Length: 197
Image (cartoon, rainbow, N blue to C red; front, side):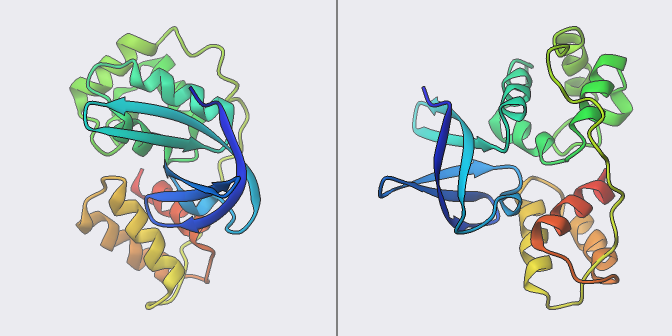
């Protein structure tokens, strides 16, 4: 129903953002809320998912990311939350390449993706991702970051847990991130995802 929303991002929480459009605030569930700038006019691509007892808007930084989300939903055993957790990792090129190559070992690193689901991803999508332009996207190695008690790091770790990563794993990488220089929340989330992968 909706393709995108142009509006001001007024709220950023660990699992969602709020985009105000014409005086109405739309709550949009996103993979990495901290990738969106607060109090800025932004275009957020959205996918509306209607369930028996729930209507949710899922948001994306680009139309390509939205298309990849839609492709993931075609896989038996992957729902919107799982698809969003998979997309939280910035390496969409690596994801597409792993599916194309049948690299199950890479795919099982995502939260909620076991061997059976990874095999199903390969089976359902192996020859269906050719139109996605995730080529040559830079993959930046994470720099461990932050001091204990850092609100940006705390928000990032909360966002990682909301994506489905185990508290034990999030705590482990939190210590690594806290050992380096201070970063913005979005950078912590990206670095944390790379460490978890």
